[in-house]
Length: 141
Image (cartoon, rainbow, N blue to C red; front, side):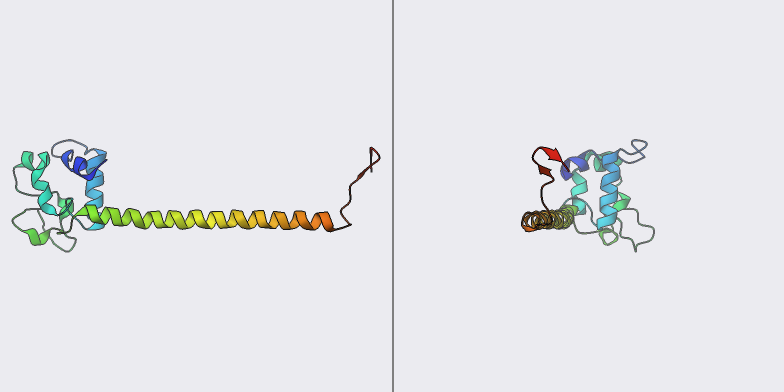
């Protein structure tokens, strides 16, 4: 789901109880990544949530951790995270993808090493006289 669409669908417990998963996800992202809105906190002014609440504020998940008694009011922008979430989400996803790529490369290297070991064992087996066929003349030994 696009971030813009998620902001448009945002609701809190005052409007819908319990908040839907998209709203909880927005709150979680804003709290964890220390961001607010898509580009900044003013993105909330274009959302139905902001228009319906009539209190000139953004969700409390936009409040900085070190601010006490934060109400999310746009009259006190210093209390809010000023950076938008879009760039931070993309950065975090790229970081996670790098871990996935490195894990896949490590797995491929282990597989390649296993095939190499199997080839070495097979090559030595054909040259070693200790390995000879047990079938001679149609009888089993």
